[in-house]
Length: 405
Picture 1 (tube, rainbow, N blue to C red):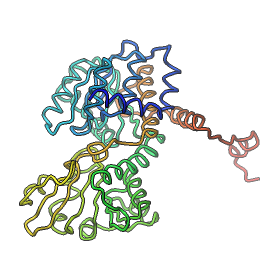
Picture 2: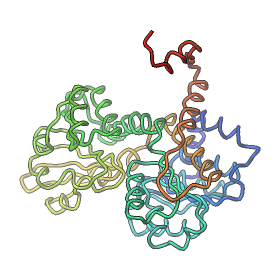
Picture 3: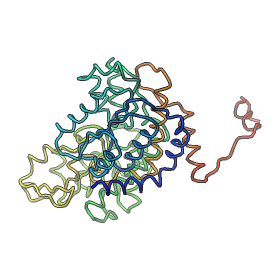
Picture 4: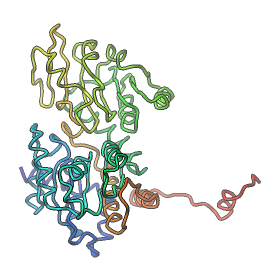
């Protein structure tokens, strides 16, 4: 198993040129020497490379998962063989998942790298004794930023949280192109069905939903978007998609993908309207968007149709197919985002951790400085051989002037 994980890690490293460039810049400085870092993260090959780079920069690392089904056990074993402390395995046992998070936090971290904010919430609720040692938290996801912001609004956030998810070099690419490609990769490899000609219902038109809808159309699907935000709904219309209520879309869809970050997006009232053979998948961080508990109660039979595909047979004979138990489909049933996308995101995470270490920030949710975002963009373009125009002095003066001549 360890050997398979090593191969995955080595393959991914070939395509992580941006992160490698930052590592080379900071290698001799060992910028994280003696710093205890706990990461709750989707444990797969790209993540493993990021963790190994942090170790080589001097960090004392403890790794746990951020989703019960997103750990690739062969990669975890390969990391252990490299001397990384790992408390994670692929499991359906939620209690074990949270137990591992507690074990990781018991190492008393100076920095936390979070994905979904389970570490953040736990250290602010049941493990508050650790807060005095904590310099800050770097958060990767939309869901995690929302949860950290909720703590801040309640007056309970005691440390600075860097909202890496809100950096343009993150959400414009990771959320849109990463989620778009990886969701359909997971869906197709686990079902082996044709997407062209299908009615695809995408719940939520945030950056993740945009990417999922865009890639569905590229595969030849007819795309329907459901939304609660009127401005996002208008955007979906202008992008060429149908927009309607889930109640109406439920009757039409062949494939449903949720990406809202909210709970009970697809429920009993929708299951009873769906066609025989529909496929249900979730691309949101937590397994709350599809009401799996109700689906279990409605079914008269449950069949493991394929790996990561559960068929629920309803009383009238209709079959509804759920992917990855309703968990984050691109990681619970796939390899996650493309390597080059995570190369960008992990570069931002490295710089976020560095920034937290070097700056004494007050408690609250903070944005990574725009100049860091831009630096990552410029370095990406340079590495891949793209060039930019630059403004002349005349153009700069014109833009700064009030005149029009």
